[in-house]
Structure formats: C-alpha cells, structure tokens
Image 1 (spheres, one colour):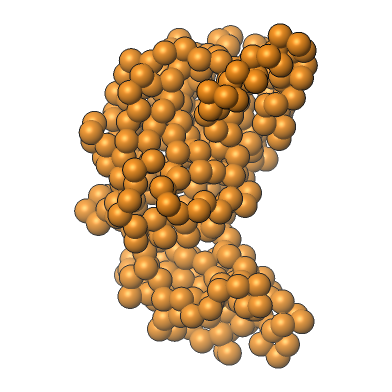
Image 2 (image 1 turned 120 degrees about the horizontal axis):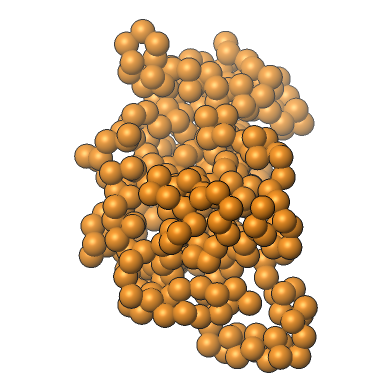
Amino acid sequence: MPALPAFPLTRRPSDAIRRVLSLVVLVAVSAAAALAYLSFPSAGRTSPPAAFSAVRAEADCCRGMEGLELWGPAVKWGSDHRLPSADACCAACKAMCPHPEDGACRCDSWVFCGDERKCKDRLGECWLKKQKDVMAPALIARGEDVMWTSGLIFGKGEGIVGLETNLGTLHIQLLPGCAPHSVDYFIELLGLRNFVRCRFYRAEGRGNVWDAKGNHEKNAAFGPPYALLQGTLEVDGVPFKEIPREACPAVKRGSVAWVGSGPEFLISLADHEEWRDAYTVFGNVLPKDMAIAEEMSLLPTSTDVWSNVTVKVLKDPVYFKVKRSSNASAV
C-alpha cells in the first residue's frame, strides 16, 4: 500500500509565517514537521488501519448542544415522557421525522434534561417540539447554567444552505445530528450580510488518484493532488469561536468538514477513508452541485509549500456568500 498523505493545514500560512517555516526547514526538517497539525495521523504509516468500519456513520449521529434550551410548541410533553439519555431523546424526535404514518416531519427539535444535579425531579424529561422555522429556532436560554440539552432534526429539503459563487451555488445539506455546534454557527451566519472574507483559496482535483465517482485507484498514492477545495468561513468583523470536535463520519465525496476547529473548511472531491476521523464533517454538497466543485478544482493555481506539504493555491480566490436555500431538494 502507498504511504498515507499529509493533511491540509489548519489555515493558509501568512507570508511572514511562510518565511519562518522556510528557515525552520533549513535548520531542521523535524522541527518543520512538528508544525503540522498534531492530531492528524502520521504520513509515515504504510497502510490504512482495519478500523475504517468503526468510523461513525452519519445515520448513527444523534447529538445536541448542552446548555441550550429551545422553545416552541410541544408535540410530546417531557413531564410525561422521560428517557435515559439525550441520544434516546434525539432518536425519539427523529422517529417522527418523517412520521411513519403520513411522511410529515412532526418533530424537528428536542430538549432533554440529563444533569442529575441540576435537573433534580425533572431528570430524564424529553420534550419533543415543532418549530415555526427550524432554521431560526425559538431560543429561551443558553449558557453553562442551563440544565437542558437541545438539538434539531431536519426533514427532507430542510437545513440546506447555499454558498453562492460566480461559478454557481453549492448547496450544502447540514447535519445537525453529527455537528450541532457547526449547524448553530451556520444559523448565526444566515442572519449576517457581510461575507467579505469568505472564500475558497485552495483547489486540487482528483488527478489519477481517484476516479470520477471518488473511488481511490488501486495502488495509487493518496496525493498530491488531494482532491479537495479549501476555504474559510470567517466573517469580517465577527469574532470566530472555535468549533469543538464533534462526530466525525468518514470523509466521502461531497463531504464538507472543518479543518481543525475552523473557520477553515474543506469540500472533498473524493472518498478519503485514509483520513479516518480526522475531521468534523458538518454537511454534504448536494450531488447535483458537485459539477461546480469540480469546475472550481480546474481553475488556474500556483504551487506552494505549507509545512512541507505541496499544495495548489488558486491564483484568484473564489469568494462566496452564505444564503439560506428554500428551493433546493435534498438528494
């Protein structure tokens, strides 16, 4: 098996940082390697582990945010509905979206009390709710002193945001069950208008390493090129709060994931099982829009080196705005 690849860095180095890195490389290669993102697997391993199947699948994700209480009309009262865990509460809501009888999404949010010290006689209460607008959920309390854990469930065609570029709009299906903190950030972004710094700055196609469906070619290296787009979702004038590590399903063709704790992110153009659970995946590009991502990967680039990793940087970054999508259909 070919050696595993190096991974995208947490952010594009500034010119000053690149000069420092160059000096470090000249002094000691090992010191430069230490600057790479430490949580990523070593590129020196010669074969992927047999534990790929242990990486959590998106369908298995059912998570919420602690210290968050969502409001809204109840479809099932928690005082009469107690469950052992937040996961079970989430699953109860998910079972109603779509509802097995009529296919309607009768529950799109849940609120659970699981802290024995704070909840006391309300321990285990699981409230199932239906929001007026699931992309702008009613919020009653947030903070460390809040005893509730809350989460969202998106029905078919819901929870889709668009990255509007001059090449077209990349529609992304968000994954609240896998990455509730990430989805919370996107809901915040939808209320803003200033996206001056949001852009793609790195683009690498599939080359001869992956086929058109994203499958890795047998006996091929794992890059370069690395079959990805990389950009930033940092909004000018709005301090970015690092996203905590969330569920990390395997990175597949179309997966959208944070690099590190954000705001840098990537869109994968291929299946990257060799990356295991290195990234928090928070969404998927709708299949119909992957042609736009492929087109972007063919734009003119220049070669650069980031901490000993050879990358392709777009000569002209592709800027985008984050918009809510109401007419896109999830596939």
